[in-house]
Image: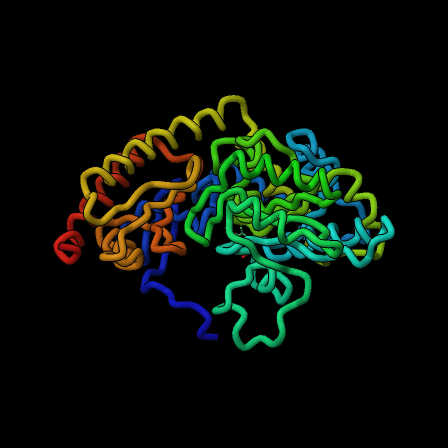
Length: 390
Ligand SMILES: *Cc1c(COP(=O)(O)O)cnc(C)c1O
């Protein structure tokens, strides 16, 4: 179906941060399949684990115990705020599960009327019917019938608007710690702390969408850790499978305990193959020193991007985001899509985001030399565009 505007590039193989097209051209991949191939391409450990698991058993369904899922859940619990994990297949599906968990919590506590989520302008939570409503973008909603009830939107970062939106039907607050699709816009750490406090004050659940920000991308395992807060429930996907489809809902016991047999489910979710991949990703990301390395190389990337912002001040407005989820915010004279296309000509892949931001999201295994090369590519791409802006 004509759902995508695809670039005319077909990749035949990859290695680390590099991709090769069928006709032999080489690209530095600073998009990582939209912040998803966290270990880069053809990572030897991830590849080997997937191949071995595929040769043993790929799918059994959730009618049976799945040791790979039990192990992956136990490791996620040990490394996070959560007491319990539900595995699924994508970010939208994880968010659906998260919102269902929030609604169920209030229903089981005698308040089925509390099912409304407060969401934020500029959010992106996925493309299922309910997540279109949580996203709230008119463009995405158009033509798909009435929005699913129970999602309202307030300006990102506006605490007064959040307080004004709370009513007797409010169940929780749903937010990305850094809005990814919306323009790599980070929430103030103080704002996240205030959301935690207001949830506690009104008995609401704090539901974090860390589909894009999680699994080490921010330089910590989960982006909310920068704010020193814990959510009640959180969604994850993208990077947790390293490119293999895997999503997860992580929750505290007071939320998870209500999702009894029959309340929620999936056929594929939490299967042996996906969870073997998830374990292989954790083997790398939780290895001593790995996240410190991400933080270090990210600071190097930021230095480079801030340098570009200085050198191309007529085009670049600023640099925003966290860790290896960085946005180059452009002035209106230059469109992010044009810079993205100019970067492709220089051999660099990036991803456009909302608010005229060019998203830079390399794999977490990126080296300083690759960062330097990406900065040089962007420098040339910006130089190629600058005359138009003048
Ligand atoms: C990508 C994304 C989703 C949707 O994930 P899918 O796997 O495409 O369903 C949801 N929330 C955020 C924050 C995302 O970045």
